[in-house]
Structure formats: structure tokens, C-alpha cells
Image (cartoon, rainbow, N blue to C red; front, side, top):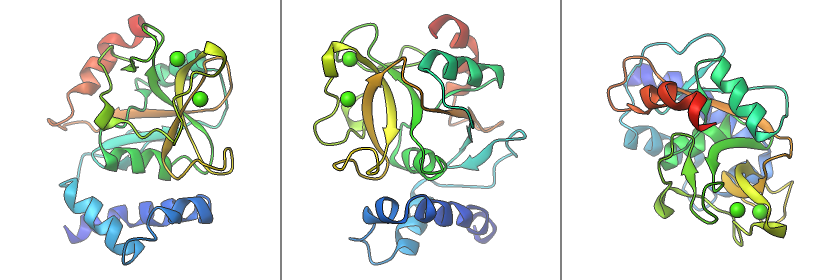
Length: 204
Ligand SMILES: [Ca+2]
Ligand SMILES: [Ca+2]
């Protein structure tokens, strides 16, 4: 566990440095940032996982890669698929913090849309994202002008009411950065990686 903690210590730093004001505000009610992150690591039951592929960073049992070109949603999904991955779908608070911490203080696409049915948010594999799994900013999703069907993670610099690691629905043709996710090889607790590979081309 000690080695595991050391391995994820950089995440603590990343989370707090990706926009000092926004990133750390969520934790100000905690006794300390260190305590909050330590608890998150413990809750995730982290163990040393197999290494992620080149370009991916391990976090909370998944592998993440934030690509460096802002593109529309469909292109972002294709860019992840090229890497045998999918746009990130945070199913837990820890996964959501990982995506936010590794976003590099940029807006990122998540693999979630309500294209099939307005107001019903589904992951790239067609599974419904339940209310308990969402992290909407206050007042979101608002489906502005009736055309916001893709989900991004944003931050206070974009909208004053946005807080760290919160979501917004956005026009799918807008350009933000892809956050790709690949479940760590050998992780039996994350079968979604197989579903992602199977469905990537048909769902996108
Ligand atoms: Ca919508
Ligand atoms: Ca919106």
C-alpha cells in the first residue's frame, strides 16, 4: 500500500495544481488535501495494477490519456478509438476526480450523450448513466437552445458557477479536449474495457 500511495501521490499534486482556485475549493471543507486524497485512494481499494499503455496514466484502476487537440465530440471519440480506448466515463467519484485532475485545467469530453433520447444520458456503450453517477454543475444539464447533447467536464474559469470536476452538456460540434480511458489490463473489476472495444465503432 505504501508503494501504491507513492504511485498515486502525483495525482494529488496534479489535482491541486490544475487551477489552484477551482481545484482545491472542493477540498477546503476537508481537514487537508492529503487526508481527502488518502481517503479516496483507500476507498478505491487501489492496488498496484499492470502498467498502462504508453501515453496513458494510471488512476483509480483505469488508464487515462488527455489528448492535446481540442476537437468535436465525434472526432474525440474516434481519436480515443484509435488508441483502443474510449472517451472517459467516470462511474465513481474517484474516477471523476482522476479525469478532472488529469484534464490539465482544460475542458474535456466525456463519453456520455443524450443523443438517443433527450434527458437520458448514456455512455458510449449504450448503458444509462444514472443520476447517482453524474456530477452536473448547478443548473446543468440545460440543453441550451435544444442542441446540447454531449457531456463535457469544465471548470470555474469557463462558468462562474462551475466547480472542480463538474459536468456540463454542450453542443457536440464544439471543440474541447478528448479524455480517453482504457481500463487497466488485468483488472477483473472493470469489464467495461471489453465492452468498449466491442462497441466502439458501432456506438460512436
Ligand atoms: Ca440534450
Ligand atoms: Ca449546458
